[in-house]
Length: 585
Image (cartoon, rainbow, N blue to C red; front, side, top):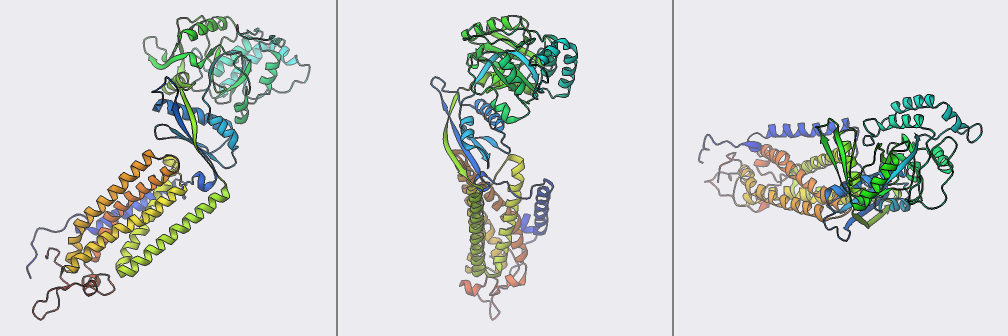
């Protein structure tokens, strides 16, 4: 027998299988430890398993707006819909984009589906309204005396009320995008409320009907003042219903986005559709910092000029930018602003300036949505589906294990160990992806995990069968282990890469929960590659040096006689089955 050549020892997992296994074990332990440290030990369940409603909205271009569907518009729409859903008092709701024109809204169990569908499926409305009065977000206490007592006391003790309001305002967290000329919104509101309690209301030129009589010592009409006093902006459901049913030409009440301030507002002066463009810019020349610039169209420019001239002469001299019934900003104005251009300055950060610019540019979205899919699952049905999916997976895994042991004997232990490691690694990764990227395990995702059992087992079978083919051709068992790997590796990689490409394509083109299937299919296929290279191959390298396998034991799964091999005899000696030369041909 020819002596093995020196200086050509196997490398990588083949040459140092123990080190590879240790590194793999460390990685698995680290991921598992991270799962427990995160406080999440089970994957997040999707609506179809936990129960709830999933609404898929598809954006459509309006006539004349062929390029309106873009990432900026879609992200803005997600923010608007998310505020609407939160306004319903819903907790743990999810609003995400899917592809380039779909928005998926996941509402947990207990949500009013009809109300939610009405809220999420309509286009946002942006309005510019004059501010008639302001107050803290909590409702005013019930008066103990005559209806006008509270107003009279406020007028007589304006300084004291202003001081108290300022303290309250300082304790409230100001809106990040709601700013006035250089002052936090809540500070300005408190000052306005105390300094000018006697301001008279101003009617819009286009308002019809008999103007309401103002309340004594107040700049807000009496009926509107009652609505303002009763409004509790600290409750999301009341914020959502504030001004419900009011038309653009009506007086109304509204809350800011944080619920800390509430407003009495006059009729709409300018509709959001009259805004041509809005941008967030950093003004380094005048030292204002981040500002938001507005460009109106011809009609909007005239309306805005008239409105600012009127508002600048009244108190409070503020106009509210109202999006879907919520005040996103309430800047003050000191003079008429003509020319169709305006600038809002204040204590903006880059993010708050960009957010306000997006609201002004896309508040009245140039998009319309249609419901492409609505699925409602009861919690009971969801738990039954999860149970059925787990049972199906267990049955499939059990059948694969039985087949592997029946066909490969003890060699099947390697396959079963690799399957168990793949299952553990997939479970840990899916659990970590829940809080990391919002991944939720849906029923199609469970199906993808079940399909992955076959993909993972297929990789082992490819490798094992290449080893058996080498033995059938007369190779020794140890030689067959090493000679089979290169061709098996190519086949496994090609197969898995094709599966990953298919999963990526399916993820991109699919809608709804089918994406969950594609995501898990791609994830488990990637896990399969890691398992084969960093667990299965090192284990096989270690076993290739054990006499139980190298001698071709009948229960090893590599018995030459059972495989039909006819190794050549050398004189009267026994067949050369136990050689350990990996280079023998």
